[in-house]
Length: 118
Image 1 (cartoon, one colour):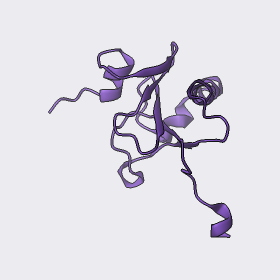
Image 2 (image 1 turned 120 degrees about the vertical axis):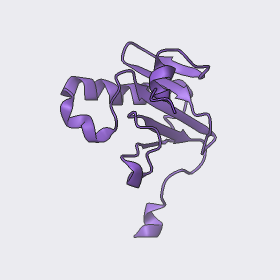
Image 3 (image 1 turned 135 degrees about the vertical axis):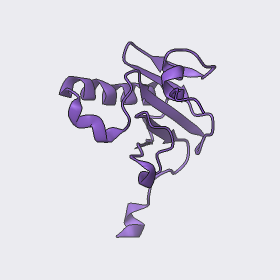
Image 4 (image 1 turned 45 degrees about the vertical axis):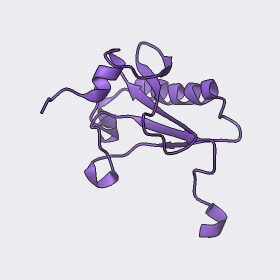
């Protein structure tokens, strides 16, 4: 079993992932196994295991990461009517690939009906 990180390979360009948007710090790709009509992954080029490591980052980097998520939504044309952004933390939170990434889902109702919950 290889210890290589799949997402490190993707952000380094060593895979055939469909890139949506990229800059020096982040890459957005189409999810290979989409859970919604629009399903992108936003991946930092810097290897971070999960959101649990956010305390080790400077505020500017965190802001740029979230701005890149917003830019990806604009690039995909899903800013209106909206989208959902998810990150899983640890095995118990459903994390499968241990490199921080954000799921951006859109194209159908992908959230919870908050009024139904109330």
